[in-house]
Structure formats: C-alpha cells, structure tokens
Image (cartoon, rainbow, N blue to C red; front, side, top):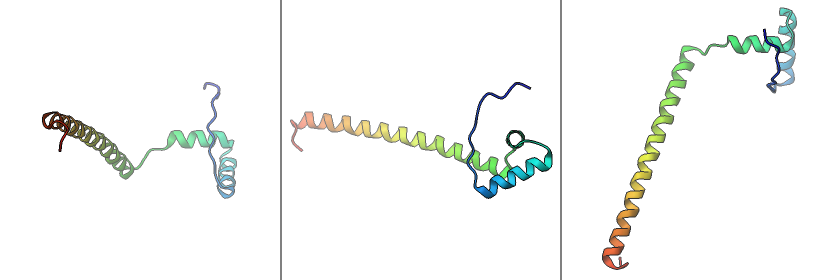
Length: 91
C-alpha cells in the first residue's frame, strides 16, 4: 500500500470522536485507518442513489431552463431594439 501523504480534516463532536476512537480501539485500528476503511467501504443505499439521480436530472433541467430564458431575453432585447429603430425611439 502506498504511503498516505494527503490529509482530510473531518470535524466531529466530542461524543462522536470518543465513539470513533472506541470503535477503532475495539477493532485494533488507529482512527485514521478506521476512517479510511469506512469511507472506502461506503456504498449509498438504493434510495440514496435514486435521490442523487433525481438531483442530477434537476440540475440538468435547471441549466436547460436557464439557457432557454437567456435565449428568450436576448430575443426580446433584440426585438425591442428593432422596434425602437422603427419608431425612432418613441414608444
């Protein structure tokens, strides 16, 4: 295994730190190794995966809607400019 050279800071409450340290001791690991193994072994539940997929779709839809609104606003601005030119700037 390659030597660990990067650091990730995780803030926890005092109670969480005590529980994590206790779990690490019970398993014969240091806290860093417990956290590494726990993070690498985490697999989201099916519900979490579905929620993440929905969030991705919402983000994509939001981007498409924003682009459509930008296009519409640009079209209206150009139309207003043409109307102003035709009417000599009078509304």
